[in-house]
Image (cartoon, rainbow, N blue to C red):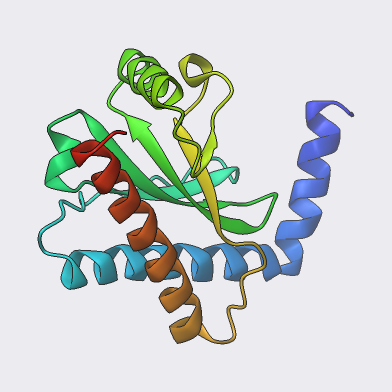
Length: 165
């Protein structure tokens, strides 16, 4: 595992190469533009101005349709750095909201998406992989894949909220 000094020595070596900074900057710029894209394309949704940059573990932004906001729920478009993929998550305003909504999903037997094992200890209630191996050479196609998967996820949750049978 190494100690902090060993980790920092490796970190410094990687920074000296310059690739990490360029990759990270490019990824953050893409996430900001993706957030702006959703904000422009879906004015009916609240897309808060914040982008969570993370600790090189995850980076995400929230999308909050009115039906979810009423229930203290939100959707997050997430880039997981180590897994190097995009996911969409359903999250709650707090852990108790997550636990309650998870129980509702379980009680209704709704299993369209992966239910988090312990919503009390997680950042999500539901998780779904949008793009398992993103190709940043074609940003337009990547954005379309993320958009279509995220909107399908949102619409499925909205339908569940209307008719939880």
